[in-house]
Image 1 (cartoon, helix red, strand yellow):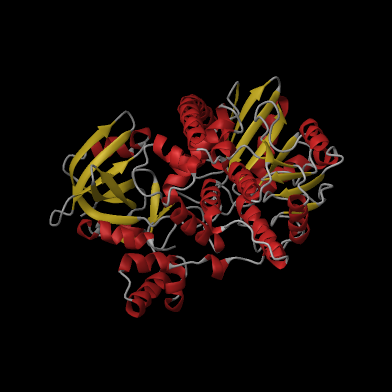
Image 2: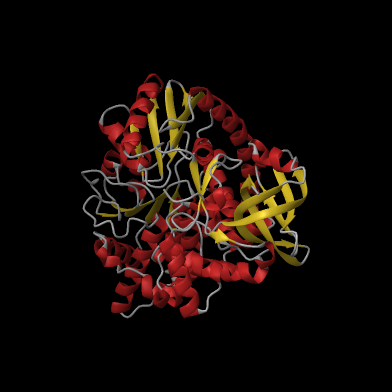
Length: 583
């Protein structure tokens, strides 16, 4: 086993620190010598396996170079042809979308594109509580009576009966969730996670699949001498969905997010402008803002409010409507936070009583709001480094959501449980899944799921590891360097933000912020002081230990970020872990 980084076998948060492998050190040196990049930037590229001759292209990913041929996906040509036919013949189109950010962005892409082609669409987002996820037979039957084409986005791959109920209308599915052995009776099912696909594009979210459809539709229009809408202007929606749906930032996904952020900075999408303003986002948006500021607000309508608010916000062309929708979503998000915190505390206590060291961490409770169980599952996963499932029970039926860790395919295990009859319904993908289960079957279902995940390696090993990119001295952490590091991004799922260790630092100040957070000022005793913020530090031992530092020196570890405050930009450490510095 590799020697613990800085000798930290057991940090304040119980993690073993791991640094770059020798091969990464060698690649870092080659990158520095051959490209002139600063060591921290070179280390990020080395961790991604980027060779010196690939560095320039990696740091400036382009849609043109990375966009896959849409026709490489099965049924794509048929789906694009049907969409063009509907537009040319002025047929009635309905968009049936999921209630999360990916579903809302996917719906908005189609609505905006069709509107620019002169054709309005009907939006239908199911209610999370009353209808549940995906197409349902009554809704599809009703839509089919008044529409010629129904586009199911971010859902539908497993919806055999509801799609069969849409008699009289053609149905096209544009999805990315794991497919079953058979496909529903749709005109086309475009999904990179169909079982008969190669898997080369399995990392795409639904909005990316929709974007590829629009690319192919644009090609067909050009072949007839017509010009379609500007697709590059729609990439803000694709980038938002990619980050919010935790799609891995690899291949074309990196380019989608990079270009999407550029589009968003132009502030031309009324809904995103209004939401950014109501969230008091006064800096250029980053992937962090997509995932943790804008995304949760868009999701709030589907979680605790009206399910279609997010899609309506993203698709509206009216700034006044956008402002009203953004205000409603912001209020729902505040409500969601309160509900989430209550469920989080109850779930954590229950899971702790059961066991936090098993392959699966889970909790279930009567009356837990189904709109927050997914977020709470994510919190449990983050705090235990294990797959987690949280279930809300009502009228003898549990509706739950799960989140996984890297290397563990939760979606496949959930599908297995459904086939074995332990679940009423289940589906998802590697990192996230949903399920419906009878209350009296929750215990055996979770026991079986834990068994399946254990076979994949969940919960193995000793102390959790914290992967560190390298060492940095406080004086080197400048805004200019952080901006250079950002060129190796965007960072997120599949491309974690680099974490640096600051060895042997002196704590000059440590104060509590609110009830749970910690603000620290530190230095190496020679160079300038830097600030650090540790969110949720007092939920565990990190906050109390650093608050009572007593003059002792600590190794600090975390991610560098820019802090914009009162017109000034400063370097700041997002502190994630610490360990006493041994002499």
